[in-house]
Amino acid sequence: MQRYAPIENHGLVGDLQTAALVSFEGTVDWLCAPRFDSPSVFASILDHEHGGYFGVTADSRRPPVQLYLQDTAVLVTRFLAEDGVGEVIDFMPVDHPERPSDTHRLIRIFRVARGRVRFSLECRPRFDYGRRAHRLVTGEDAVRFDGGGFQAALQSVGPVRWTRDGDDILGELTIGQDELAAVVLTVGSTKDLRLAPLGKPEIRELFEHTRDFWHGWMRRSTYRGRWQDMVNRSAITLKLLTYAPTGAPVAAATMGLPEQIGGGRNWDYRYTWVRDGSLSVSALLGLGYVDEAVAFRRWLGDRLRAGRTVSGEPLQIMYRVDGDPELTEEVLDHFEGYRQSAPVRVGNGAAGQLQLDIYGEAALALGHSVDGMDDVPPYDGWQALAGVLDWLVKEWDRPDEGIWETRGGQKDFTYSRLMCWAAFDRGVRMAQHYARPGDTVQWATARDDILRQVMERGWSSRRQAFVQQYGETTLDASLLLMPGVGFISATDPRWLSTLDAMEQELVSDSLVHRYDPAASPDGLRGSEGTFSLCSFLYVDALARSGKLGPARYAFDKMLTYANHAGLFAEEIGPTGEQLGNFPQAFTHLALITAALSLDHQMDRAGRVGA
Image 1 (spheres, rainbow, N blue to C red):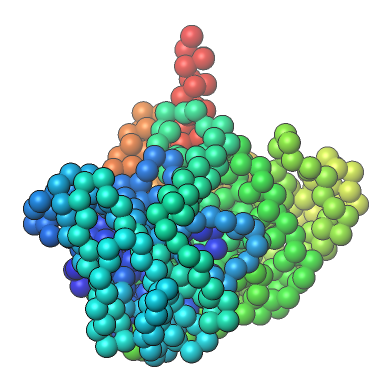
Image 2 (image 1 turned 45 degrees about the vertical axis):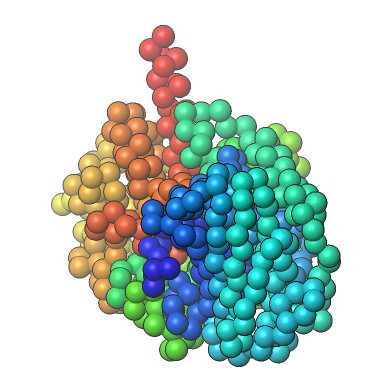
């Protein structure tokens, strides 16, 4: 086992309430329970010594191979051993995911395709980010790790021999061709951790049920475009990152993974951002997933009606998956961080920031009209949205922290104004379309005022481009969304000039930086890689502007940066490595959006050419 497997050397499995990272060496080095945003059981990706892990190895001099079963979240790690070919099949059963559960299972099936293979196991849980000690209790039915209020248990099926190693456990099994064994890890609170007897028939049934669940979910997709495999993998990843009981997607499965090795940009992304979740609605609707869009809109409507925030605004930028606005940030000083990239933070202090763009993204999510969806907004929900828009009329012209959550003070960010424009624009449209009461005259006046202001103050005559903030000349890739929300035509001369300027300053071999921190200090130490979300937004913007050749080239090239399993982290580093939290929902939803846009524009160009 490497001390720190590269971020991209992982696959993701989950049960729609939590998720685990499995390295392609066979090590589970990240798992939180019972929810995405709960304390960790395994976190060796953040600290090899103190984080905890569940490793599997086989006698092999060659590197393992890892892949997903097609169109599923079932992960296969194949060991090319000296005397045969062995596999570990990892998955988390999806059973009534809409009901919150304190108990979750990770199943690891061992099988041999050829010859005979010896597997070695090593399970070392470290509860509560390594802060809570545990004791090992062996019994006839299972090996239990008692953490005092939280527990993990290992059940074995087949010839697994366990050896105690202090309060951890080592295991070994040897099986031949077509033989099967399994280990089931169950985690949960002590009072709820009841273990059902398991044998090979039950293991096969759980495997088949999980495989069939994902196949059934994928059959609902309407996507028939040119990039089927990558779009399907991104859709499954977005689903894996969604907390099913509330419909709230988390930004990523992890926390603390660095945007720069050794740097301080290490954040906790296991929460639900209004922005990310709202944009995912559009991506999933584009694939025909109406139920997921409805669930998130319901969660968002609940946040609007509740109005409970730490920031004091009607909405805050992020919440826990159950809607709790408290995300107190603290530093885990005992963790060294991935490849010594400290500090490791849990919680997120940016929750209290003012980011006015979220009102536009929320309105975009609530304003989608789709066949098969009950579009008419409930009266109470509409009243809450209308009240927020009335508030925004008085508040939109304020400096804020902006989309990138910089910690360099509040400024007049152009993107924030753009999304306030979108909030009023969609509000006016919804009021008219659904015949709902609202001060549409006031909203329309604010909308028009914002458009004029952005055209005057957000446009730099010297740069011939829309810029990050008023009075400056720095470019910002978030503005790639301007045509997509309808603020400006994709063929407007001002937009084409902006796109050219971004290509010269922000684009490096099809990869796109968010902005230049040297030109616009963000209050954070260190630098960062190119931002994968922005790279896919760039593809979308190129396609909308009719630049189909460059768009397809940039898209196909960007896909080569996916890892072996088709997953993306937040950023791409200087040597092509993946950086930041992993996998990141923002990146995968943008991949879907770019594919849909590129397919549409290429089909349209073909029809015109015919």
